[in-house]
Length: 189
Image (tube, rainbow, N blue to C red; front, side, top):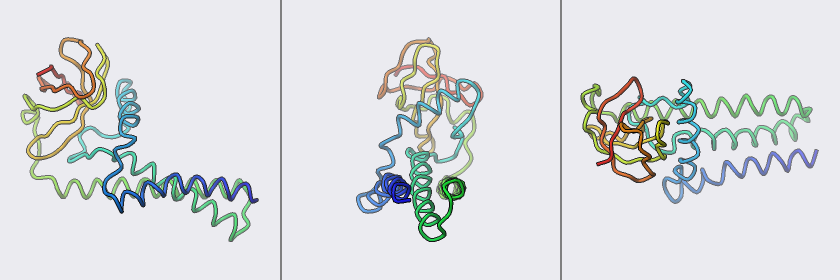
């Protein structure tokens, strides 16, 4: 039982410490941004949209916040169910997963609501054409990467491919040439 409580405690600290530091020091949610972008881009490439590219006002660190909320509440719930209710490992794990997922979903939905309220106006396909931005996750020859652009005062993160199948490294300035569904086709500026 002590080992279980220690494991839950470590998980809670791994999620809770960055959340608390972020409240004290400001926005630290960007630290895992590249990893989450990479996972989202890989899944976008096979047709699975983990983080919707058209989320109005999408802010970097969005997925990291959900992950930190999950780990924090997973650990807290594990400790509470183990110590207070003397629950079995299976019940403790199940309740921790459920509460952690609910916390992550609620945090994500809350952020979407906040960003939608901050958004001004509806964006059309034409608004994206010739928008200038920066590569946030490397775009390999014919593979999907990620870009960050500013359109009508809104910072957006989109999946993107190179117009000429050239590699575009992180930080390279780009311009959107056209959109193909939710994927922006870009060229180096």
